[in-house]
Length: 500
Image (cartoon, rainbow, N blue to C red; front, side, top):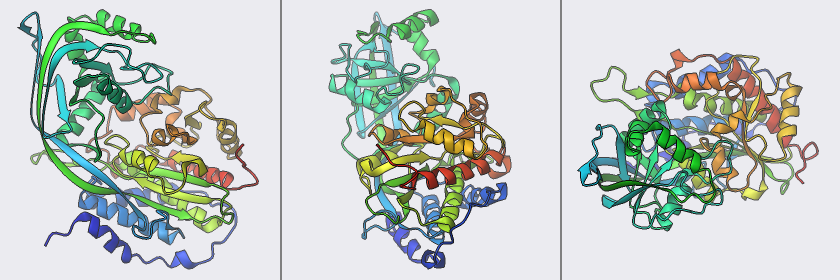
């Protein structure tokens, strides 16, 4: 008999042995984290036994069992605040795998040629189609989320990322939903560069995930690469760039491409329940608020065809490293506590598929969002060497920058005060919380040198070579562990930090 994964998780948890959970923590000064400390957890989470930690697989069961066990031994209790679902918050997901798609673009009655890799389509239904005029809508909406172009009955093409420096711009999903609300029958997104296009190709073809809830997107969605986008603009790079520049206007009315299109999709649907894992250290002062540390546990699982020599995307840097740091932080806080405020730890599911676990938590929080004084997301930390400056993704968005900088400097760390790292603000789990008004950040050395980060993104990122034996370095990850211990202690102290 095949036992559902959702049943295996509670059974696995019953087997946890956590004598540390009943021991009194010993207060004192934190012990410096070593690279070996971090490596120990990465080697487990990124091992082939965990099969790439894909949601809805045995890799999820093994990952969540490991994290819950480690956190319980550190002294945590379940943080779901739901006796019927201890440790694990169910997250309903639907996987969509393209079965067959077709796309035909026409101009003046003539078919526009495109290569087979020019477009990828998806849909929320098993079968969907859309046809009509094609309009380029720039970013899709203005900063307030209003659609300024007439898209009724049309196929809208929009840009992947918001305007540079517009961190508060609506998310890609919100912009697609706004286009659907304005009558668009399809929404296609332009991939900004080749390496992201390849990553999206792999993701969609291996099965894209969404929260299993009524969709607000148009009937057909998809993504096109930059080369095909230029062809749609009559092959002119300058024409496309001119329209992108014009789209920065808050009243941009769109660009009529002169095309019509017919889009058709057949999709295989699989509905299942994945999980966020949530634990907490209970504070001494109930009602004083909470600190949240989080990171995503998931990756892409078996990501290559059967004939490939290495089929597993192990995700050592992304994000076994983040979960290793999170677990080391938990062990040290368990030794140093208790603290005034509750400290929650969360491993989210399906971040790689669109921050889905984080979005679900933001809509179904286990603690009121207004009680979270700070959320610190830990992701892709095994890149920087020791001594890297501390950068903040989310700098300038709240009034907490000075507090974070002061804690960083107290550890002898330099601070990168530019806003450059905010280029990634919508590409990480903290965004799902920040969009709801929670002060949410990513803090550490991996984001201070964007050339170094881009080098990783263009290399082993989302591929089978992101393995433990190929880790660039763990010096910065060890230092960032100590930084997050210090930040958690500071913000969990009701006397040192009191929100306005």
